[in-house]
Image (spheres, rainbow, N blue to C red):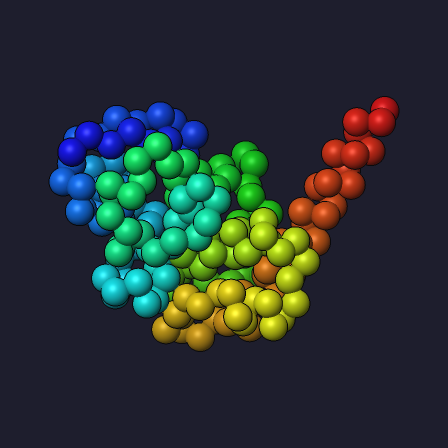
Length: 164
């Protein structure tokens, strides 16, 4: 099946079996290894990516559903010279322990703060349903609040610079 989509800002034309999970297309065909395989049942969230701005579990999302979609993986969230606020907060708060699940958590967190710009702890608990075997939930919650503060600071700075 021919699939056309945009991945991390780059238009792609893929030829693959339509039922292949997006996760395996990203990892095996495109070499985007940041998205992790965890459970294969859409339960753990290690495979979370954005499709048209919504956090989805890519292990159970067939590539055929991504026709003409805008897909963003952890590799497209930010880069070394311009980290996304969530990535910066994750570093500042020293969130990862083993780190395996963290790309999925960061993608879920980025989608959350896009949807709810200043989430409460309850919002975070209800919307971030990924699983961390190391139990770094407290640090992740703290990092999400820090990411909100970073984004607010970036907006204020951009606003000040535009008035100069």
